[in-house]
Image 1: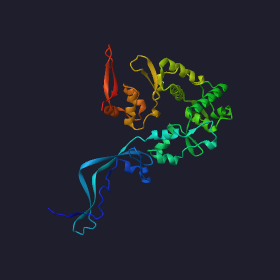
Image 2: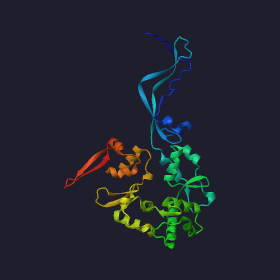
Image 3: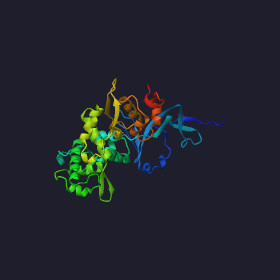
Length: 352
């Protein structure tokens, strides 16, 4: 058996090197060629972000130590150990932390009452620096959160301003005798009071209306109903009796956006029907997807802290991917058999 001398290098530094296991396809990602950044502050787990994706950084410790050998200086006399590896770093695709983006935007409110010089937004470059997400995911998050860009900075919009402008738009549509038909947004804006900030008007038109044909738009009635449901519930602490909520909700929605009596079942991802603890009184609770943690496990734990029993179909509205693997990890099945033999399957939090 051939023998080789192995000795420590003069520059040996334990822990200097890391072995990184890349997920399949990452090296083919064009965004990888532009660089990658490890993001994370005090109390946060480290995440690696390319231009397009976000990855969790996990260290898997090994029971054996691997040695990194350099034979460039051996000259046939042996090898130098320049480093050691006590495990490997594994990158796994994970959800971007859009909740961080949401919280930052909440500190930058765009209000109709503010003077332009008083508006303090946040630049996109600052968001990229602060949020654990790729640039592409931050752009998508800004769109999903309906952020407003004004003067090169980003803002969230006060819901009272949105409510006021929606009401003005509803009045203008009534004057135009639009009814449930499509409308010309240019004609609509000509009927609005001039004192309203055009950026806010455009924001509401983009958020609550959609272009359906060339030059014509129509209301996103589901989004408008969800907006008013959320506003009503927030004003009352996040929970209301079922009948009281329905009455307040219908009253809040401008009549032109009501095709029929709205149903709580249409608020999936915004609110849920539940029962008060130790009571048969039906209530409606505000459980908005946009308010939940971005990380899937934390989101699941939060949902089970709000409600003890969930149907899989209810939970699916709060996740962008299949919830089956999360349920296996975090929940156990509770089956209820009715007198007619019908079986209902729901899930409750697994004790850990």
